[in-house]
Length: 110
Image (cartoon, rainbow, N blue to C red; front, side, top):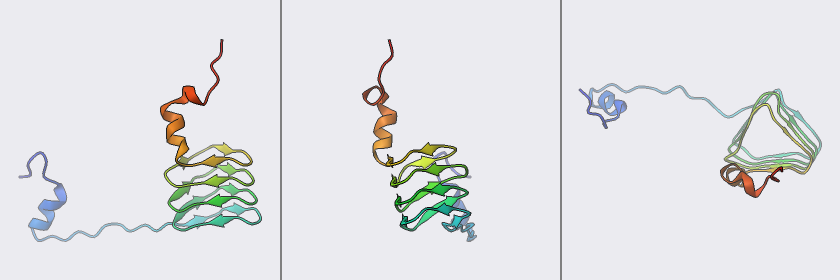
């Protein structure tokens, strides 16, 4: 029996069973690209629109119904679903800071 901290996969290996994982590959599916777009693999882009002159960096996933505006730069470690990024947007490492301390980036009302 496995202890509380022993990974389940360790038991399988110890029992002489070698499991095979399901392998999925990064893909670009049903994407509308503007002019002069740069995409650095690996990326997952599907059912989205990428505006003219935009840059999509490696390890980015952009999901269905997302429209990226012209001259935008989308970098790794940011996820986007059902969103709109306007012209000259930059989405990437700064996103985590904005989410952690929104008061620094949002004008307070009242």
